[in-house]
Image (cartoon, rainbow, N blue to C red; front, side, top):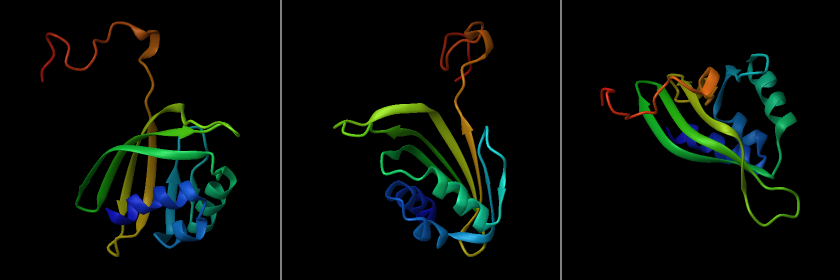
Length: 131
């Protein structure tokens, strides 16, 4: 789990080499709206292309079990010259698969999206729903 937490830190400070040290050579990265990246070099290139010190990850929940880590959070950004961080995009869930060496082998990101039409689906914990 420590390696996964460090991936966010390294990405947030723009340390692509530090990030690389936590990944397997055959790593895979899958984010919605982007082509899948296979192999450490392709993953590092994808992250380097998006690297900015004006973006960071805020993590809410981390769950780890049997070589898999799930992280819930959001990406926040700061406009150049601004003093405050502001929400950017949508909340995410990252699902990591770790190798037997506890290095990141796979990361798949999911984004929160409201249901189509925005109606007909009660919120979590609503009356009549199992909890």
